[in-house]
Image (cartoon, rainbow, N blue to C red):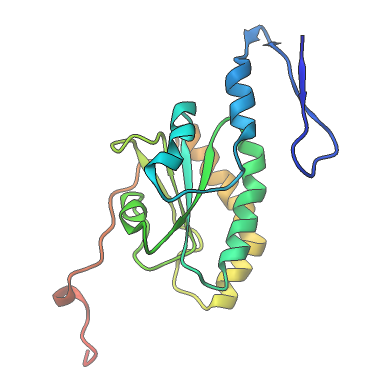
Length: 184
């Protein structure tokens, strides 16, 4: 027996086969992982629970309300289609969830940015996607997310999932006395 699932906006259904290549698939996991939004906006622990139960790695897109946010959101949503059932994707407010982007080793104050955790557990290994976080004009950042981000995000996600990247270290804003003074 098999099942068909039509995603919104898709012309062809996705098919579930209970036995693929000699390995049995869990229908409940298959269905639940495909019923979640491609890029979910959650802000409370309670909203994360359905994703936690899936046990998937979690990619978090940190946005700050800038003009570049929509380009980043479009790029990540596009890439997320290829990772259904392998990675859960979230949108987070970079200001309200600063403790989360710091845990992924992402630079302070640079959004949009993306981090990936191997699970939703607090002590899970975390990885920062540093491409596109360099200081740049809004136009250059928008161009990155519109033109270059998709293949680089795919390579980053594949490298993390295949164990080819070292986890990131927590980032912090440098103390005031460590910052260069305006006088030089």
